[in-house]
Length: 327
Image (tube, rainbow, N blue to C red):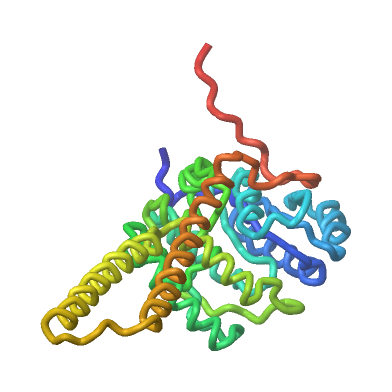
């Protein structure tokens, strides 16, 4: 086997898109030209996650113009994580690059990523240095999320590392084996492991419009990530139950001592009512957290596919068939 330093790998680039029709017309040629400068064998996979604008018409024209472009149209809006999964499973390259469809990921980093792959890294992921395009609240919530999801977790998810990355073929095959329905891709990248290298980058201004992924979408994804990769909420419930039990026992001993030793009568209904309301709230919160975990178990056991493809256009790289046993 030749070493990576002398290899020119085939490259697949996956871009999920949702209502990005006005940016894809310039973004696709720019990325495709950058890929062609790295390898003669390239493909660019655009996964349309149920867009409601003119994305399909734009992609039909681009596929007719560029044979390296593949257009996957999902049957509805499944979300960014399933769209990424669809692109990863369709990619045929020796290395696979993931980028966003808003133009904020600089193509100038691609040569550096490939150079680090040739140097031996299986995963090269980009870490954003600034979040000027986000509100102060969203920045603080993001920082708290990474602290919480990594709390007591053996698999550490790198902070501020998004989907912008280059992956070796063996990493892609490992990801394809993870079939869970509640997908948090940043956690899955970390879970499969392999030799990883980080590089810093400054996000570029959006090519057009504003982000379709706002604060509520970020909170939903963060909640999925915490429940999928951390049992910290369950451990917090256990610890809270232990602390409250000790406090309740101590308070009970205090009341008994006051009554029998000091002769002080036990206070009336106020203490009982407040105590009942407090513990009822704790119980309902605990049941709600448990229900979230159980609900995700319910989604998993149904074994529904993560996505459905309604249309595929484009040629891309030749399909790689699995090795056949000798006759």
